[in-house]
Amino acid sequence: SGELEALVDSTPLIHRFETEFEGRSAIPPDPVAAFLDALIEDYADEWLTKCMFHYRWAFAPDVEKAGRILPLWRDRSVDDIRHGELARAFSERQISRLYVVGSNEVTAPVIEASYERFLALFEHLVAARPFVLGDRPGASDFGIYAQLTQLTHFDPTPKALCLAQAPRVYAWVDVVEDLSGVPDDAAWLPRESLRDALGELLAEIGRVYVPALLANAEALGAGKEQWETTIDGRLWTQPSFPYQGKCLATLRAGFEALGAEDRRAVREVLADTGCEPLFAGL
Picture 1 (tube, rainbow, N blue to C red):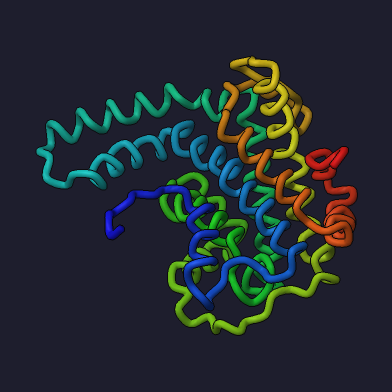
Picture 2: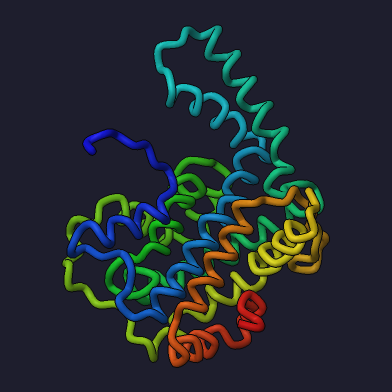
């Protein structure tokens, strides 16, 4: 109709663009690879953001930088006095909401260890090939990239960890900033390579994100406002998120929509990764 519509969720936008435009696809044509791409993207969107929010608002240097800079993204014309007021108010509000993503003194070691493991495995991945699923980026790459623009390029503490432990990851984020040079016929990984290529990353997803998704869904089903579970050997408690319940439902619907042979192939890739419970009984 020519009217403007504001949209903010990159996942449905990617799927919309896949149907509205030809070429430059960000979803693999193989249904098995496409499903795994969606699972990894979901982990990036919903777990790595816990890492980002935690590091930004749990460490003094990160709080100082974010508090001073982020209000200016909205308005650079404020005077110094108002800028100081906005920085304090913004920081205090965000710090007070750490509990929403589950960040606290008990869970901090879980979040920080998961980030460092991710850096190590993703350093290994990008040393082997340009992107998660081959020579071209999928939706999972964009989900990971979005979080890393903050973790590795804005916030001082996780940025320092990346520079020290995963320089290839830091460089990868720079490269993904402009993908105009990636040819449209760049290859995706073949199905038979998916297990070896993605095993480490899927095991990390099964280790931390799967328990969170399942506990959240169980709490939502029982009408509970909070959920708790054990993640990586520590008690984890946080408010229930309807959106993450939607994420699990979407993943399960995507799995059920696969043909029998494709479902079998997905199960083979996920075997012994800890991701299997997401699709138990389906």
